[in-house]
Length: 124
Ligand SMILES: [Zn+2]
Image (tube, rainbow, N blue to C red; front, side, top):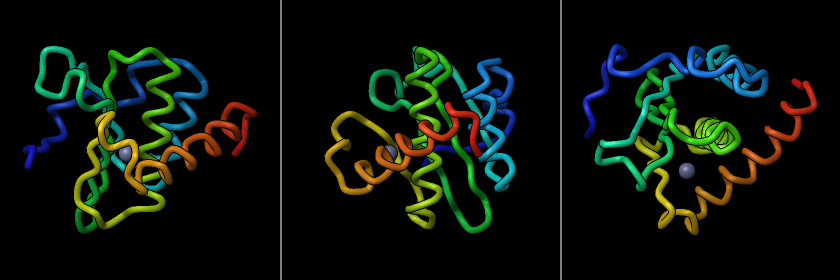
């Protein structure tokens, strides 16, 4: 288990003014998800994990690698929102390239593509 303290990470809203990014962060925040970003470079997560969702009891948090290029970072955040929407209750969802074949990962990717489609159009 990674110890998760809120002051370990940067609030996701602060790392980019991109409107799609901002809308995605608001969508999560409105649902009570703590939304964070941090530079994973130089940590054990580097190259292994782009983001993760943690849901435990009433606590929900998403952390995304702030060093990713904007579009990849948006996709990762949308993907983690997919885990929240579809797979809430499973404790940890680490996203490594190796996991991409797993059913949950495919579902979260599908969700992310649909969500980004609407958010990029300015909806919801
Ligand atoms: Zn995933």
